[in-house]
Amino acid sequence: MKSQTVTNPQAGPALLLVDVQTGFDDPFWGPRNNRQAESNIARLLAAWRQAQLPVIHIRHCSVEPNSTLREDRPGNAFKPEAMPIAGEIEFKKSVNSAFIGTSLHEYLQGRSLQELVIVGISTDHCVSTTTRMAGNLGYINFLVEDACATFDRIDHHGRLHLAQDIHDIHLASLNGEFCSVVRTDDVIKKFAPVAI
Image (cartoon, rainbow, N blue to C red; front, side, top):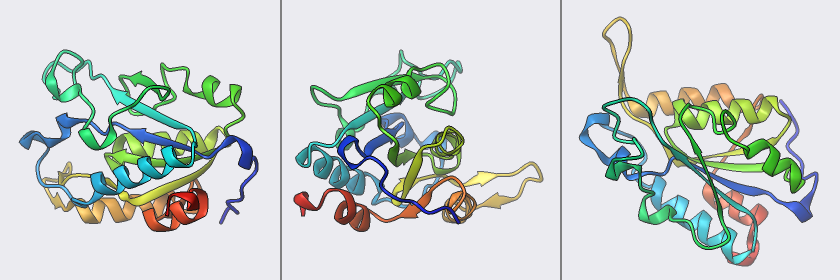
């Protein structure tokens, strides 16, 4: 298991909010887990702002014709709990990784940001892909398990897999190799205690 240590406390960590968008409220996505994800995201965002730590918003702008996350649809909007304010940067993407087709990596490197606290939707798609790529790029990642969520899925055999099971399995796969899995309370105490 990788040791997750603070390497540049003056520069971070950055809070990376991945696809916290209203389109995921559409019934199309089906049942989901962790209905507290948005409230925990709001707590983290408030703590980061109070501590004057960097905040980065990722918006998924789907190119799929029927997606609820298309840029020309209402579901492209950020949820109220994750609305950017002045001074917070946003990157738009059209694939699962926030690093593909964006200048996120250059932005982080230019500001010596080496640590990321990652939250968002969905655990097994854009959150996981972004976390994996961030790990491959050398970032120290903290994935907040109670500030992420996903949905029930049907596999290629037609079997139903429940959202909580998918969430737990993906966190188990990521932890120790691509990130440290943490909880909201713990990450606020570690990085933004001024907000408590």
